[in-house]
Length: 108
Ligand SMILES: N=c1c2ncn([C@@H]3O[C@H](COP(=O)(O)OP(=O)(O)OP(=O)(O)O)[C@@H](O)[C@H]3O)c2ncn1[C@@H]1O[C@H](COP(=O)(O)O)[C@@H](O)[C@H]1O
Image (cartoon, rainbow, N blue to C red; front, side):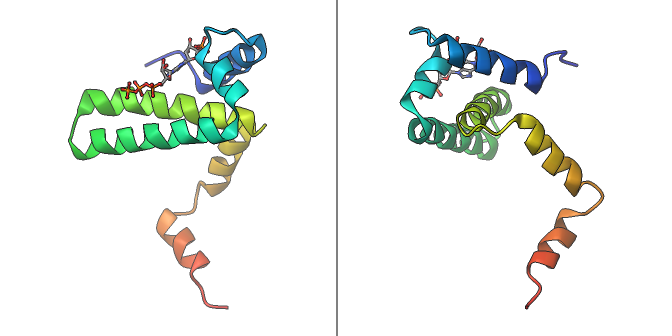
């Protein structure tokens, strides 16, 4: 079980973004802004999908790591703390996804 948490990664991203270092991928993405960061997030999502459908297990692990990192960068640029996403996930516990979807599709 990894001891590294998404909070650790979020803190690193915040620190690297502030650093403005030219050799920091994070700082470069923050400098380029949301459009570029969101584009990278989309690319990593597609690469994760490709790894999944081709049953490339190592690829799924590696592309998921890229995907999650870039999601945290996008959240950082949007000033959304990851804790807010966790709170939303917590709010959803206890309700099945199927029931939630059905409740959204009620007429009126
Ligand atoms: N987890 C990551 C992480 N995952 C992916 N990446 C970078 O994201 C970039 C993705 O670029 P590309 O799309 O060109 O790479 P690719 O997806 O392999 O694409 P292909 O070349 O395969 O098409 C690469 O430069 C990766 O190094 C990351 N960069 C940083 N981090 C974390 O952020 C920390 C700070 O990094 P810096 O900001 O670079 O100091 C690091 O110590 C890590 O903990």
